Image (cartoon, rainbow, N blue to C red; front, side, top):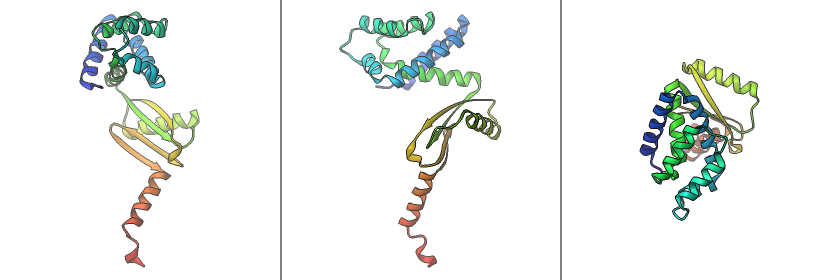
Length: 186
């Protein structure tokens, strides 16, 4: 079961240790890798959360998957998580680490969803526009394609949502018709 408070504590400890050892950027890259691994491999997450698989097997699996791809500090941290029985919290810890790193560095996470893939040029223009309008010193833009939007875009940042999609417009129009707002004007 996800535990954001626990994940935040482990992430904070890892950030403090990485700063102390002068390896913050390397550990950040490792956590981004682990975060992406957990996103693309549901089997990996399920395996880490499985009570049937023994800890030594989980440790061997993590080592096999991440060997040569993460730093020694992160590998030791993963071993600690397995020893403490917290390997099932790796996805949440990775997310919490990235969030705390972004806060520490003043980076704002922005998610852009569009109906079709966008070009790199348009991506850069959107980054620049959002940074200028919101006063963000640095932005980490994540893009996603959601064909249900039909057209337009949805922008998410700092618990705000800018929905300029055709799907949203159609829902608003449907709601207006359901309330018969136009009957009085006929």
